[in-house]
Amino acid sequence: DCIIESFPNDEDDICLILHGFGEKSYINNLKNSVRNKNIKISTELVDSNKLVDLVNSVDYGLCWYTSEDLNNRHTAFSSEKIALFLSQKVPIITNYSESYKKLYDNFNCGLYSVDLSKIYLKVLEVENLPNSKDSLKAVKITFNISDETLKLAKGTEIEAGGIDFFAKG
Image (cartoon, rainbow, N blue to C red; front, side, top):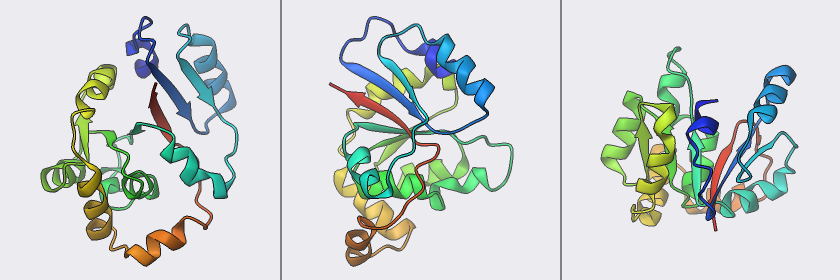
């Protein structure tokens, strides 16, 4: 809800696509709350062979995990979603956790925000990241993935649930 509310109505060159799954009543309420033509909510399944193309079609990846449980606080180094964005050189915007702080301190591949309602401001900041080399370096080192594995991953099944995108243009 905070992301939708904070997204400006007059921004014509940026579109927010929220993609993922959730409780049906929550998704319906979310869809009904959208008053901005540049916000789309998608719950459609994405063919696994189209996922890399989908990720490559966006400018920013939004990955927001609650910090309430220990597992979520370490997603910078374990999330398939994070690895997918980084492997495709897509900068990420995340919530704050020690793992994301460590990731961004070592690699210039994204930004974190403490306040979800200010996430749009991070979209403006992330444009200035020279991240393509750092993204690949981060995914190779953090996830211990070789070039050969990255090539193979383009043809494998990857779960698409919970991926959010900012698309510019």
